Image (cartoon, rainbow, N blue to C red):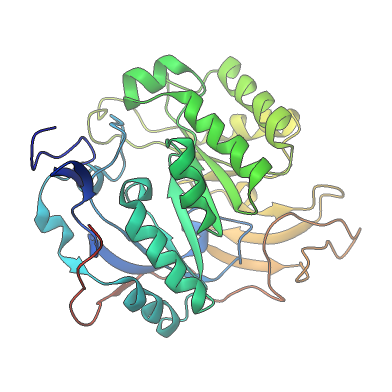
Length: 336
């Protein structure tokens, strides 16, 4: 790249002989969400999470649901600002159990995300990465060493889709999933956005589920999320709820224990059940929790089986609220 030229991700540019993060400390905004919105259903259910992102992305997904942020090339998008310590204080003051790097992929603001995660860890606040998992091995190790949880967007289960629709490759994403399971203590769940006619065939879904069980085991939660027309795929219809129900059934038939539907009203598909006896453990209606039948160790009250995840003595009570947070003060200069 030429001096000052930015890469595809927008936030990195050449300065001298280095590629640097140009937007350290800058954000597209901060708000408090339910943790289930990330989505994470097995990570401190019912609690609040302070969410923020920056601008740009290292993928070029034609269906991007947050394109106004991830595809932004305007610095005005980054009107909010906060240094890592300020974010940690704001999370504590807002009653949040965690902070989430989301809206666009935190891989591209690697340094800012890691510094924020470490500041939060000192205050007892967990860190959550919502990412496509498209990253080289060395930065992957450094990045996830600072994270407590992640939701990995698995866009499809074929290379052609990844190349043509996202501008990336499937292989590195699968490597990230395998790495998280084998080599870290990061709690992670997987989201699969189901796009009609593109990645919803029975053959592809079955192949994906087989790979997940063989390589990750049956207990990693899988979320099938409904597509809505957006960005450069506005001519594709929304995902029918029946398609999500079919995908959930296939995944369960292939041995995945915890399978969810998202972006649709489906209390049965959003609730958590014991993988051994089928008892309702966590009832969900959208992001609101109902019946809660788990101990802090995740045990089923009927059969004693352990539901995998990170749980407290009882659920949080944040509910479905979304609260915008204004950060006080100016941000400091980040590392070059």
